[in-house]
Image 1 (cartoon, helix red, strand yellow):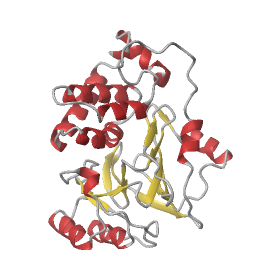
Image 2: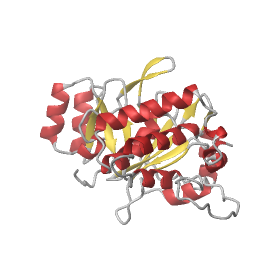
Image 3: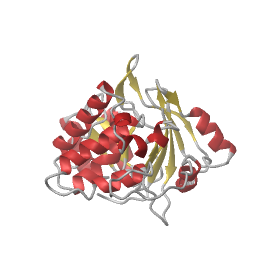
Image 4: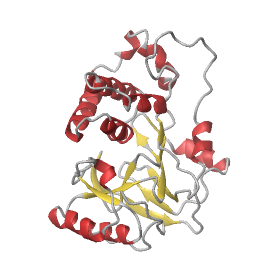
Length: 293
């Protein structure tokens, strides 16, 4: 994958997906195709295949002109993702972050099809910021190891198909302090004795859970990915959010893209059918109790 230094985003963006994809690439934004009216990557290695190569981008969208546009974050562009779900909204948290002066410097504001908000920032040239998620707060950060669906892509929403829409341009874009935001949104756990076994996620850390998935060995890779995806689903994350978090780690274990997508989808379906499963497990219920409260 290329590592461009972009001008953040094109000043003008066509509503024609092939032209918009080419405009992103020309501005130095690495893109890749996702399924029409969806968020799943179409390429074999997902966001790892993102590129600014205009010939490759042109070839992708000539073959599939209705495919959505994925941007690999953390390489020139980072995004604060404010979600709106039936279970809650991240806008109260966004207002708190604004009062703390932690979200200034965005270069682009995008309304998502669900009514949420994506704030685009230039990546820091000095340090890599990893993606993270705070399901309870309904606020995520898309940095290294993640991706975002970009305007003018269209997805299925509650009231039909909706576009990602640019609603404002910032005047002086600068990198966001994602670590400060993450720390503010992370409750301090009560002191307790470390557990005797090494199951991941006992401290409620999504990052630790994702890192653990990346260490899975052949023989338990699929089962471990399923377990991890269930735990993320129980925190309120959507299927696409879980996929964005786990896909890179699962790929490092050698799992195929289709198997990863199928396993994560199955975990979310299973959790939706039996949402109280973790509460009956003395280990899992205790591990993620703080994230579900």
